[in-house]
Figure: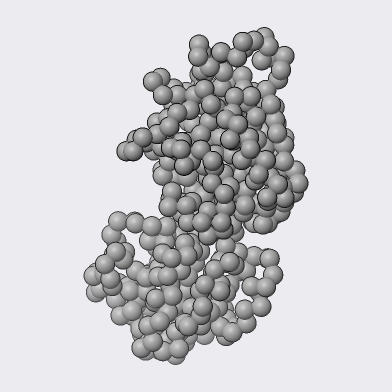
Length: 394
């Protein structure tokens, strides 16, 4: 039996001995932190700015009778939105295992002395003995997956194998993706209602990452002003404003009314083709897509491979509330049209306000059957909306 063991997903794994929860010097830098070991009275407000760089947090339990670590884990999940691994480190007992998982812990790290008193079988049996919840709103063993960390308990290894970024925070995902695809990754942004989130994250990691904006010639002037404000505010050094081919525009839409007659053809002219000419120059692309947005994205991984270009979706597991919280936390300016009832913003002729109770995208191409701009992907190639392929959001 090793001197230290990690009990995770009902299985035992050999674990290294970790340093005492006192050295927080890594927080002063700007690098990824593999493991952060904190005391059970740590000031989470002080740690919050660095949480996006931390892959695993160990919370110290000096005794099984000291339950402050449970509260820290719960706050990390609910108040601070931390979605990396959280491990309980100390002499817990099997009866506390189920409650630890319900509070947001991913695993329990114990030493040899503890295992002499309670075997791995004791820990597994305890999960079956305690099927009640610790407090209202907490997860229940084998119950419905209500959050990222609840869902991870049943198939962490399988998910990690399929998606190496699974369980990472959005910022940690971006750091690793930018490093993995160094010089070969791009962020395409629509300068929409939540675009400031990814632009801000990227600027904190590497301001030189290429950022593409499709200037269709039909945007609201507020969107263009918002673009200029964010680029200047975040200090992005490789911002690329791409436009449709003017010869094609003059040939296909000389009077600028193509959106009224053939909206799909207009999107193809002003969005699909201009993006197609630029996007294939990169091996990976950062997107702002989220699982909650459409049924087609419900099972979307953070890292999508296959085809000519990898997709990195740092916000895949985020909710609309997560976006709002991030914007407020970092005091980021909202899109000027958001306060006027525009919840999804595209080109001016094809975007209207959304009324209470409507879907956020109800204002796009209102009174028509069109629902998407037409940027799709088939076998790694970008094609127009006529392909009826799975939607790939811009």
